[in-house]
Image 1 (cartoon, helix red, strand yellow):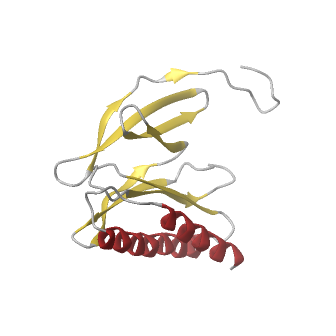
Image 2 (cartoon, helix red, strand yellow; image 1 turned 120 degrees about the vertical axis):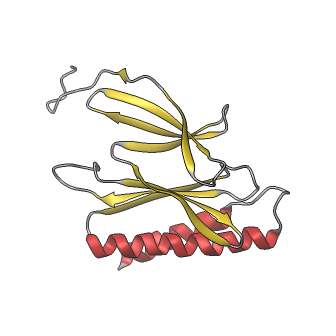
Image 3 (spheres, helix red, strand yellow; image 1 turned 60 degrees about the vertical axis):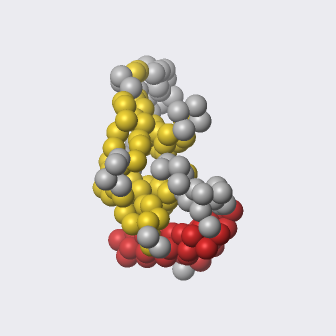
Length: 167
């Protein structure tokens, strides 16, 4: 229960920190904060129903569609001792017509972290596992969904084995 409260408190603090651009009214921004808070609480409650000990949720806000109100990006799942974070999923929520709308759900989030390419002004999926990695840039589609703008070639990097020896 303490972790649930801590995660919810962290969500409230993070949501309180974002501000919108001049394109949107303060009422739109306030409404989006409230709607995103509800979504984060739902993700936490759903995840904890699966596993109180191993559920993980990470999220951030970024204005991907450049309308002045950031989209909510989440990466969540139940961490397994054998398969790690392979079952993690990424969701993208946007704020449209006064309510939070899921623009994409079920994006593979295993061994993936979310980042922002400041130069391209796009969200990037950074994937890496077993010495191989790639980047995928995301953008909002004309229909309000999320598409892959481009994907890098896979690259290899030096890793270490279980004993700490370089491969």
